[in-house]
Image 1 (spheres, rainbow, N blue to C red):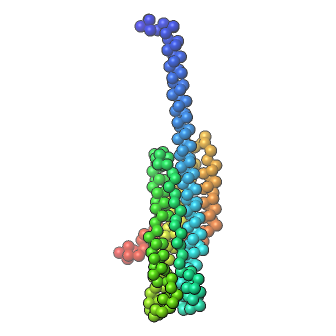
Image 2: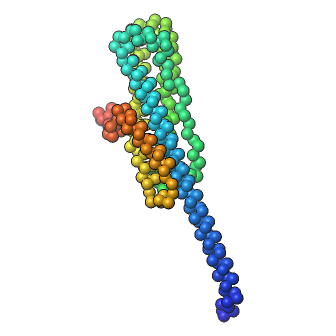
Image 3: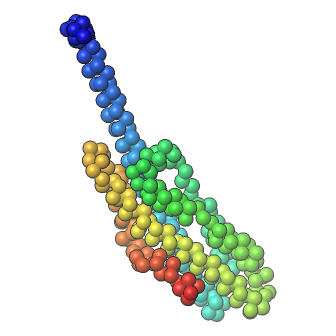
Length: 248
């Protein structure tokens, strides 16, 4: 034992041990910094995607869906001039462009954030699903192609058949309007609050969060600017409890 405690042996041993511990500590700090930056990148990416999806949904709702719902109501009310104009300009045929794709987030980045808050990952995945779901949009395109692309074909039908076609067109537009409202409320009431709480956490006190806060402010600015298009906070509960479920 005395041999092992000799100064000639202990000094090099302690020096080597100290150096090893220093290397381990530095590696741990480097890894911590890297992972924190990956977490912030993930949050920034989600906020950016939420902004892009929200804004595009609002624009489509405001400038395409709502005007066509209003026009269809007028046509169903007997506005034959508007009907002729819409058929000649092929204005029934809308929403043909494919939705933007957002699949550039590395899975290991999502995994890091998921360790902290799995609900954020679930909410973001739900947002992507709501954005990419195009059943009603495809239905609209196919329905218009079959029933409203030919002016002469439509006008050759009797009034009852025309009314059925216009009612179905209005129903599909209303479904698309509902989908847009649901997505907008989801961003405002579900995803955004979770991301706001996350980026404001103490774990990021030593890291730059200005980009995330800038994106958050852009989303809030859009919500404020188009507040008249947003349903109230009870919208999802009303949808859930409405229809046949409410009757039951």
